Length: 433
Image: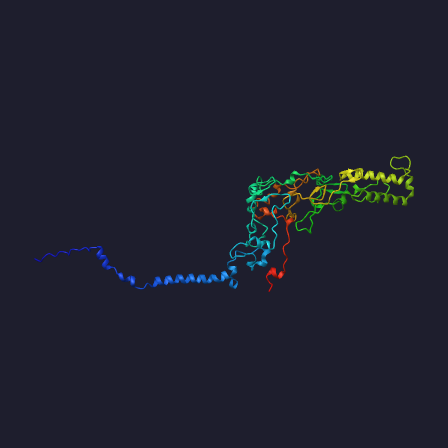
């Protein structure tokens, strides 16, 4: 009987430290590492290439300066776009104040002589007037440059006298209401807007009403800001109110009698009236034999009587229709001004004491959209300057550049600006050899 065969017994490998160590090839540390060497050399090669490529950028070789420029300069500085050294005395540093003041006079702040406050710190030119922002005007500064102080003005300045010491935005309760709303128009005229602009159309003494604002208030087309031309009798009133200058109380001159001149000089008016009756008497000597008015007999001093009665009629009844009289035959003069009337100052005052306003940018807006009280005004004293509410539709809530403080306010006191040294064009443009 065959011997029974048994399967071989599996002998497990003993995995100890010694056995594992015998299987490792410790000579790999001595063999060259081609991939590691190539990677290290490639890294240093790329660093060297980057340094070499930056050299012309730093030195400005081959027009490479544009590659590192912050951005295009403003239109006012276009001639200096390729001459960084004019404004920057050190590379990659902002322009110092002396670079700006070489061409510009940074007249002091506040902008108005009436304000005596003095800032506690000096603000650098470039802090507000930031270049390399494209073609934007440098004067259009961000509002936070203003509100950083005016939000708490007394903490940032001394000698503050204005009432509005906390302004954070052009919004209700964040900006004061316009001061013109608390004033009165003191010019010595009797002006009633409501009569000239009735709600219903009608004709009075051959005058068609209502009138339009532009019939009297016109802007100066030669003005960059659209300054309003002063309203004058000859230009704006004479067509409808020539009858207010009629003096012929006894109707002696007939329908062809000319009205008296519209002048501030009573002597000129007296001579005009006397001359008119002398000419009429020369043409018809029998005129003196007719009684005057309700008289039963002719006047012995006919010419003197007619001239005197005509002047009384003109100054006593006619002139007072539009003017406030200081005394008999004396009309209070009305200066030809576009702003606020001040009797002792012929040039008058601006309605906005601290702000700037230009009608030209607003010429597409209907007058009554802003001057809302015009149709209902019955007194000369009424000031029809718009309130802040009228401006908020386009300014303050539009979230555009129209909301900037600089749209309406100046920073530098332009009345104290000084001319800088004038230089040849070649030097300014860099074309001098």
